[in-house]
Length: 261
Image 1 (spheres, rainbow, N blue to C red):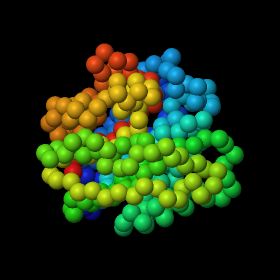
Image 2 (cartoon, rainbow, N blue to C red; image 1 turned 60 degrees about the vertical axis):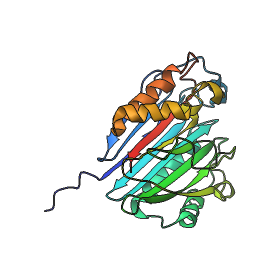
Image 3 (cartoon, rainbow, N blue to C red; image 1 turned 135 degrees about the horizontal axis):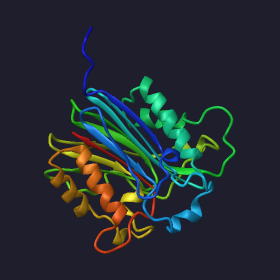
């Protein structure tokens, strides 16, 4: 029997399981990635007015697939209830276990078919960012709805979003919202670190990106981590929870994935 490949890993984290202010669920995924999720650190955040269920304060979700040279990184940030982010990320996780998208168009088609059966009767809506990476080819692609971010940090890269951020949301109420996401492609180099995260990072001071984490904060955290994705994840989340440059932080839910190219 062949020994298991240590590079293989998969992870699903749902906000409903991480609702303690100031606490972080963080873990390694395979040998190349790490991920974290947190409700935030501020029980007085203005984001609370968008929570439909007082028993589920964390409406973010993420999943990671590490299958040798092929990887998938997915984050979602819901509003008015966790149903949309949790259901769609769970379905993505199941789908990506069986199907490897071959290009942005194929991935968009997969996303369109995430909602199956009767529409969920909920007002919940969510951002959705899905990134696919081929470590052997050093290239990848993704599809984005909303304001989550995919960035690459390394020589020749600045930690600015590679995806087009907008105000679109998807829902489980119908298939139409899952069509027409912003497709993008990218290349990466050995030594680069790829980060996929919701706006609990770059709007940790709620709805105020100017006083939240910027590219230079992320670049410094990655440089200090010396290529360790778990350490980089911990550093970035700690900044987001505490705030930067004397400004408040921890005012939104957080989902983040860090992976070495």
